[in-house]
Amino acid sequence: MAELEKTYYPIVSKWLLKKYQCFKVAINTGLKHSRADIIGIRDIGGDLTGEIETIIVEVKRGSEAFATASGQAFGYTVYANRVYLADNKPNGFSHEEIQIASHLGIGLIAIGKMNRCTEVLSSPFYRPLIKLNVQLLEKMRLGKCQLCESYIEIGDDNSRYTFVTKENINKALDLEKGVIFWNRELSDRKEKSGVRIGKENTTYERRFICSDCISLLGQLKK
Image 1 (tube, one colour):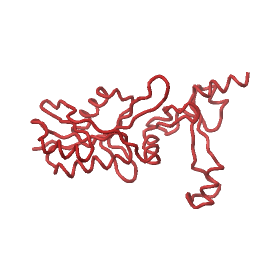
Image 2 (cartoon, rainbow, N blue to C red):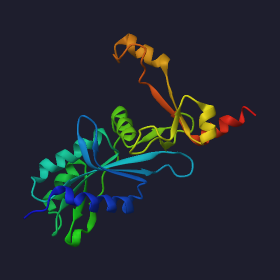
Image 3 (tube, rainbow, N blue to C red):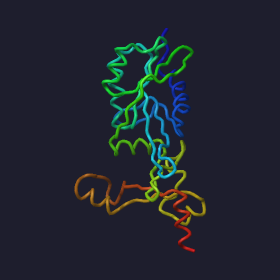
Image 4 (spheres, rainbow, N blue to C red):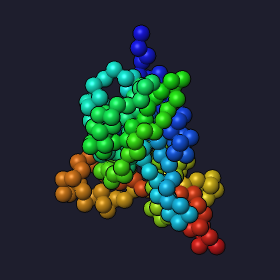
């Protein structure tokens, strides 16, 4: 009997952590449009920037139509910088399958004997839709600092905003946390133009400042 697709999730997830040095990995996570099998986040900015890269892997068990599975993987370019199809291929991918993946522009990961993962084809780098990418990152409890532009942990599994205080810099300094605040001017503009229709006197324009930047701002008070 063929193994269920989800049995490969931990295997590919562990490989992704090691191969790409991801600092965060999530399984079966996504937005209302779709859920990704595996998402990995890694730092790529070197010493001078906080730039990160989002990687999504679509996992299959080797029995699905290859072109269809490849197209599904490519669809995640709206969310991620790199997309892969990981398929159960004990004998490797055929030349034709590699051609299809290369033509579509996705990477390939072969799940071989003893469940060993091997990258057969690298994924090109994509510029995803910013709106969807940052929403996905927030779903993974990551937020971008508005000052240093680094991505920080804003919460955990218990609460989305565990590691930030709500518009309270003094409290953030005491607790050595970051801050979440709301841009009300931008929210009003979007509401007036019809871009965002929400509850009266409610803003959704949330922004973050990391604990390191808060610490530096605190020195200005001295």
